[in-house]
Image (cartoon, rainbow, N blue to C red; front, side, top):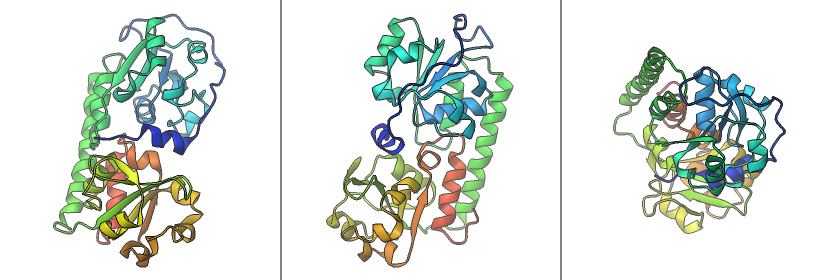
Length: 296
């Protein structure tokens, strides 16, 4: 499954490392203390840490960490691929959580060599990704097993509710094309084996591109092949084109069934493709837009 670390970098923008507001805390072994100085280098893991009541122990986050709003008060460290190691070490972290696919970045090796505990967490494009990640965090944080069980049960409840809604539209799978945009000169479409394809399928749709995997540049030929009934974008991506009017200027877009029937869907990027605690809610909201009979 292809995730979007580079695209999220473009989406969020680069940010310089902010100075630490707190003094160094004593180092502690994973799982042996209730207090840590945590750095999260994943928006999904940041949201999960807040959900598990560890938000007050965050001393630094990456640029993909945009939710909840309280995270705006935490120093930003840039993107995981361009970390300022000295600035990060100045925060005196005791734990650094990062998505598995980024674990081999040179900056993270430097942190580990400096004695910082770096914990890679495997991400899955599934509705229960947050629950699976929570079990990994629990190996390093003092999280009560009952809390994990209740958290997992809540996610399972959201999944069942989504499945019940989709059951009413069994057999109806509208063709959906996901377009990543950062201005008119940076347009890409999602093929198979992408998190965009995964969320579309979880919401009861069919990814409109089946002839290739990963992301490729948008071409008029791809639009003809896709013939999408819906076009799905990040809210920020559509805004970078000046809205639907700007989207119409992209060659081939105005000839698609999606554009002709004004079926353009824009959603927050992290919410839509983060596969965090709100993944089932995001899939349900998308399903509501794809199937008129499904309430959000």
